[in-house]
Image (cartoon, rainbow, N blue to C red; front, side, top):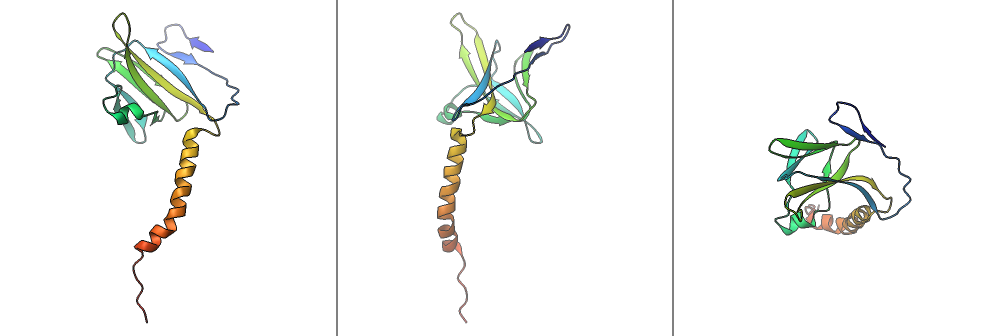
Length: 147
């Protein structure tokens, strides 16, 4: 449901989702007519600025980044904030329109399926560290003095 109150500069979006997917992520995409060089987002104890363009392969490979309740993109004189009532991730991209001008797209992660790829990778990483962990610890132990 979309709700825009008279005189308000805020658009409220309420969603009800019956989600039965596995290994999928549901995102809400907001294409915004803003030429933003960076996006600001809330993190623990403050906020952080991240670029909206991909200069390096690390930037291009970034699927999403963590944010608490808000993400803000702006150009001089105008900005848009997306506020969420929960803590999820987001990604921001910038593209040039055919007729000229720039669109900054903010994609907010709404739901993550129970068998999402990020959770599977985390389990595999954890289990591989657990298997190699004891061997690594035994190599780093200091030798015991013999009586």
